[in-house]
Amino acid sequence: MTRARKAVLDALRSAEEPLSAAGVIARIGDICDQATVYRALSYLEETGSAESFVLHCARDGTERYYIAAGERHHHWFHCESCHRFIDLGVCRLGRLCDQLEREFDVRVTEHTLYFSGLCGDCRK
Image: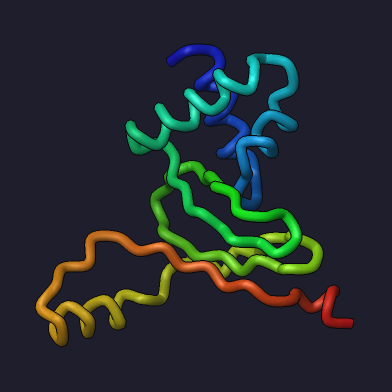
């Protein structure tokens, strides 16, 4: 693995919330340029080392966010005010996926779920 790819993957693994490409760049400093970060993110996603989702945020616009691929699948809550992500823990949608498969005769192979709203601090 190249130095840049390792730096990007390490940034994703150490992050406690999803990172945009700009967030990755902020974490790794001047190890590589912006184009190299985007190429590394693409490579990591293609090889299954990272996952991504697109978030439509009123404050920051539409952006792709990345997380290191892990053993457990999880979901996120995104605060529309402070832009904080809260990990909602292990996926609880197994039974729903089973029901959808039976009801619609489909096979769910993956899903992405995030909630948006206001966190407790911003609601106060």
